[in-house]
Length: 192
Image (cartoon, rainbow, N blue to C red; front, side):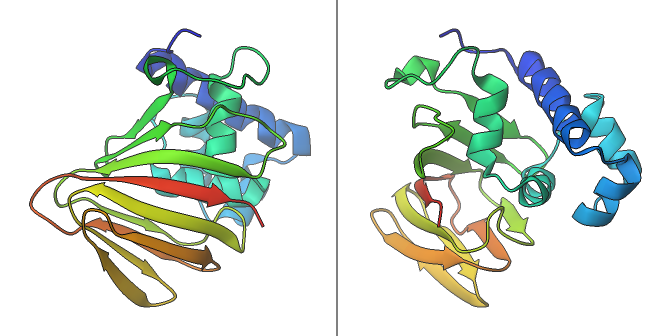
């Protein structure tokens, strides 16, 4: 499987976002009401005039009832599910505005409940999600390098290299690089 180039991923993501809205028969106004995202931002995202942030994609995933991994795998997959994805073929998506880089490690599969994601946050990066894409989502966060502060249910957990946090996500979460160097971690996501 060929790794899509950055512009291709943004264009495919824009098209998929437009398809999802169309499948439901929603206007931009209806989607704006459901997601809390302005019509103009949604329109620009669907036309690939902007690259959506992780926070924006999280809001849309919640409205569409899917995880970010599932949405991105729908965008990146050119064929059906495969059991193995080589390291050089794993899809990478970047939220340049927040300093977040996301690698889809698990082979994409629409009907399986667990997935692995590698996350990297640049020094000083602060990523806030106002809600989970799926309420009750189980997450395991294992820090491979650096320090990460994760806030869930108004409790901040500081994780250093080797530490692992397990939680269920019901409300807002925050991922913050808590050190002077980049934080690199594995996020295991399990649908409820």
